[in-house]
Length: 97
Image (cartoon, rainbow, N blue to C red; front, side, top):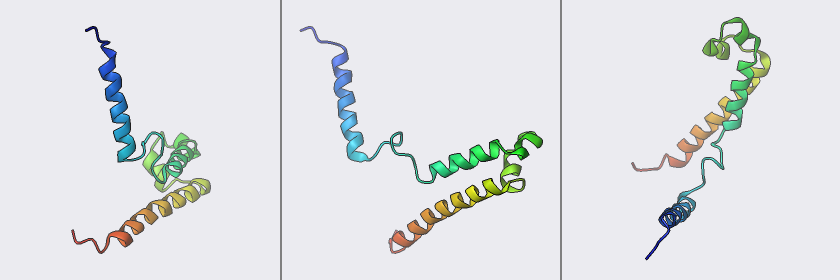
């Protein structure tokens, strides 16, 4: 019996694809919540004048040296993250664990 050595790998791949669809959505296909806002704030801070003038101190530029545009995006990101925490507290507060 001559069997193709690739056949077991392809069967395993098909099996795990089914398992992945049963377990839940792919993180590569569906981004986590607030991901776009996080990317926007990082991009905004990296392109800001503060990063160019303060030798790349990201934390300082994000907290104290932030301009108005980045501050608005940071606030939106904060509200998005806060809503996730509030949702979890609200929906799981009766959990007996």
